[in-house]
Amino acid sequence: MEPTIFDLILSKEIPADVVYEDDFVMGFKDVNPQAPVHVLFIPKVQIKTHNDLNADNMDYVSKIHLAINAYAKQIGVAEDGYRIVMNCNGQGGQTVFHIHMHFLAGRQMQWPPG
Ligand code: AMP
Image 1 (spheres, rainbow, N blue to C red):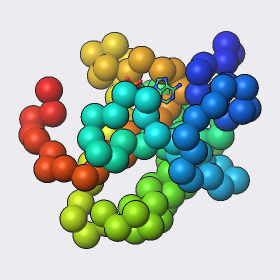
Image 2: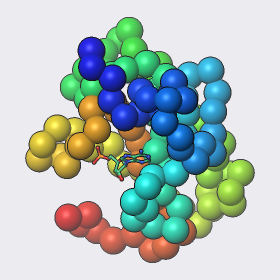
Image 3: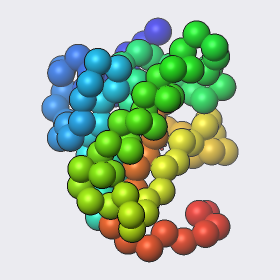
């Protein structure tokens, strides 16, 4: 599979502002933040879209959620709250085809999201 920009961040070929990392997951600041806190959490394997999740790679999603819990507590937003979003394909607004969870915090979120 063609490497995406997120694969290049994982391999350190391009820089990113990394705020979280473990054996399975990396979290780095979004270059175009939509909230005071906007971090992208990605699995350290290439999974193109939500449609490509299956029984063999599903554990990465659990690891991402646990990473987000840890990070939300670390930066002190767990109690105030936050939003997590995963876009899928064209109508979902996905632009980078390596799954990523947007973690947004630090302001009141609106609904519907648009
Ligand atoms: P999505 O539209 O859900 O695929 O989200 C892709 C996100 O990646 C957007 O919010 C972009 O601002 C962000 N993004 C693109 N390139 C980079 C980069 N090099 N470093 C950090 N964030 C990026």
